[in-house]
Length: 613
Image: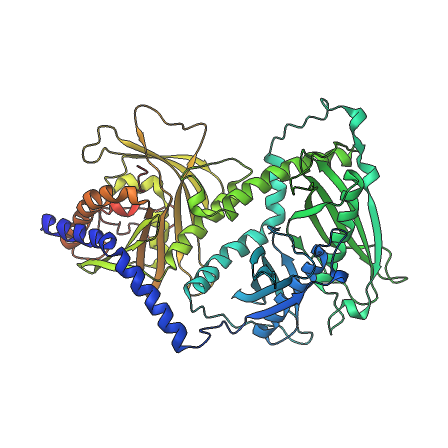
């Protein structure tokens, strides 16, 4: 029986690669047929497009589109998309980090596309894509991507937004990952505070030549703006894009005072609107260069509002940090002068800017890079832990939402699916278990109990309990096949409860590196790029459990040799127990109050991470 199952699974995995070209050809043919049948094809009902010709009045001193003007267009397009979904006025709550990849010249066209990725209770995430187009050469460039949060606003009644229904693979991915991004936004302020407190930054204030330094006070800018009707929507609230444009203006002036040149804005950290402003408000905008590095500088911007004669104190509206560079004639960054901070708050901002630079680089590396551009095991430290956890969960969710999985085998109501991309082989196993969903989630998320029922986990050590939902483990597994040495893994386990009905419980696993747990001669270090569980509630005491694992094509021999064998053990165990979630002896869980619960069967392959060859 085991040999037959193994042969069957091997044939299934082999067919994934042997039929690669035919599947891709068929896929392209289906897409072409769909495009012909549907004219322009499917279009998201919340999608809004804006195209603007860049005129001289929109440009800065270099003849390039002002980022402030671009932010106004981005905000307007995103707001129209949000209002199309909400059916009522919407206001900007936040704008996530923006990385500008390309400048836009006068005479070119800016194409902006926005659509609602997901709606929550009264807020929604809007995804924005910005591209530039040269009408003469027909060349196009990606300028930036942005994610904005809008809140539906109705004066007399509370707004309850309808949920979006994703149709395409891209929409399903964005819809799924939006919940994890929302979690990051809600924790943004605390996250930055904790990271700055935990980051040890080695500054070189004492070693710098003070005679060549520019006093930070020389870069200080303060400007006031009166909010007039053209700056606000039909309810009198100031456009978020207008405030962002004013902020970019004072930040550019501050940066120019340091470099005595025309700087280029490269990065904006999250805009978070702390409160509204209305027509008639005076907005005081303050900017100063916090720190200057070799080729970049950070400018801090603060916005406060007050109403003439009606308020004794100013209201804090917004804060942001912007990174500028100065480009030479060859578009290469120039070396910048050092900044000399003022004692007290100036030195604090100076050191915080250094910490934010490290956080920004880690975040861009982890969150913005494609998975193929990252090593399997990413170094773990306090400056990247939040974003590495986010990437861990979002990578698994993106794998789950792919729609080209192929059913390779089904035995005893356990299904094995495979998926082959250009550089990855992925598989997932799926079954129904007669266990409450939250119970299955808690049982399988406790890796310390895994050796009690999984023989492929010889020992598990909790290395660090990062927070309630994230932990790092050191796992040792026995030698497999012809391997002489046992394997060990350093794994980040991130678990998430559903954000809304219909969302799964998630346990995401990926490898990280820790200085305290380097590779040793006693073990062969294994790595997992993306693996984990998803749990869907199918009814009372009924849960659909899926395990996912993503590996490189070099893993194929390991898969066809071991996965098939371990899977046959799994099938045999399921059959022997006679129930989907067979009893593996009494298994108590500290978070459960119902005493002994049925433990999972011998499903080592579900947990064993992929091995990097």
